[in-house]
Every structure is written in C-alpha cells, then in structure tokens.
Length: 239
Ligand SMILES: *Cc1c(COP(=O)(O)O)cnc(C)c1O
Image (cartoon, helix red, strand yellow):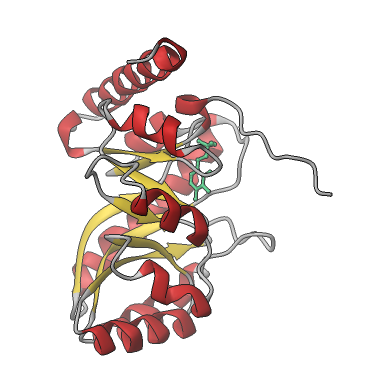
C-alpha cells in the first residue's frame, strides 16, 4: 500500500472490527455482513488502493462515476453496485455494469429496467429503496407502496428482487435510529413471508458511516460506508 493511502487500511480495519463486534453482540455471523464502500467523488487511484483491502464491493451514486470506475477496473474485479437515484434515460449505461441496482424507487423505473433487460436478454438484480423516514427530501418509495411494487416486480421476468435498501433520517440518537432499522427489517421479513415471484429476500442494505453498527444490530446484511473509509468528501464550489 502506498504511504499516502495507509490511512485507508487503518480505517477499513477499524470498521471491520466494529462490524464484527456488532454482529457478535447480535448473535450473528460476521462473515454474513458485506461492507460496501460508497465511493462517490473518490478518484480511480484511491478506489483502486481501497479495493486491495477487505472491502466486499463498491457502490456508486452517479452513472458517470460508475462508468468511469468500472471501465478503469478500479474495483479490481470486485462487484460494483448502483446506489444513487437512477434516471430512466441512463439505464443503458448501468445494466451490465452494476451487478445490483440497490435504489429502485418507482414503478416507472422498474418497468424501464425490465424493458431494457429484456432487450439485452439478461436478468437484472435489484433492491427496492424504501423511504422509511417518510422524508420529503429523500428518494425511495413509502412503506405502503412496497407491496404493489413487489407485486409488479413479480410479473417482470427479467428482474429479480434480492432485498431492500434504506437511508433513514440522519443524526438521530441510538434509540430512534435503531427504530427505523428495525422497521426495515420487519418489512424485509414480511416480504420474505409473502413470497412474491422473482423475489428472494437476501440483502438488507442499511447503515452508513455514523450508524452502521446500529444497522447491523437490527439485521443489516450490507452496510454502505463512505466517509469513515475515505475521509470527508470534497465538492468543488460551483462556478
Ligand atoms: C454517500 C452514501 C453512503 C455513505 O455515506 P457516508 O456517510 O459517507 O458513509 C451510503 N449510501 C448512499 C446511498 C450514499 O449516497
């Protein structure tokens, strides 16, 4: 590891330890929980350095960054997921690049994905993003919209629903934060019980830098961590 990237190693080790601790205290197997590095705004060089560490996969928010980093081999062969809001006019660049689209947040997007996947004769794995905090500012479907969406997905032969994703309200106390994660887990288990076609509830994606341990305590199988791995994000001022 190049000296300027040594900090990544320390950060990932610390996160892995915290993940293990949370898993064990919940009576879960640490190896069942995946670490997704949320690497928006990070350079190809930095992502490559991090890919040599015990990170399981990478998550991108912007189509342009997914294209750039997959085409540059930045993940060193590890999977890349799409975790941002996906516009239907950009689907073509994401299919075939993202092994899992975590952020399906409307019936319209679901149907557009089916159409494009059918055209290419492939099956696309997705998660449904739920706006569990019912925040106006956030994407994701409302909890009560989940059942009609899963029903619709069940009729799409080129879509496989692998689970749910959520970004609960930020900066809450532990109790409130765990409450949202627990509500997600309940939806996840209910969906599994209802057993829609083309669905296998395997991935519950929730928890970020500030709250991934709480998410694991409440059943997350995949946590998406950015800042705690790479440091603060820098957004250049708009010209
Ligand atoms: C940026 C981002 C994360 C990671 O956020 P951090 O607070 O930097 O850990 C996780 N999920 C999504 C969807 C993101 O956009």
